[in-house]
Image 1 (cartoon, rainbow, N blue to C red):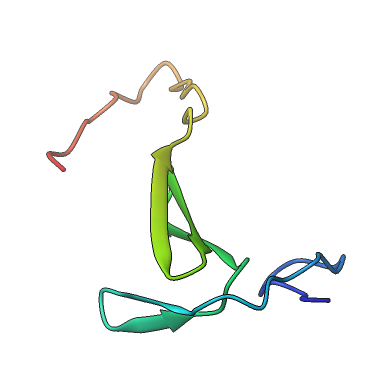
Image 2: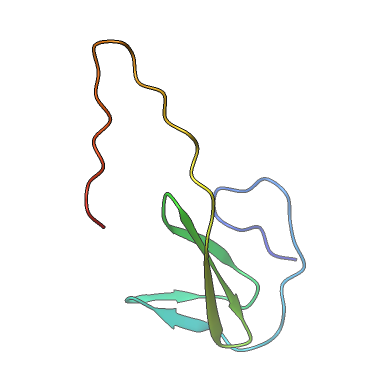
Length: 70
């Protein structure tokens, strides 16, 4: 069993190869969040990343929404 960082419940972890991604090493079956709107997982030595829907932002009357590049 594997308890991913930041998670409370264990998951079944594979016995496959670990993954290297942007200077980090991740175990088979591990998931991580490289940014607020994306998730990645390691599956037998292969990294798979996907975009997740970001929460809708509501600004107060005196605030303006600013979208930064990237």
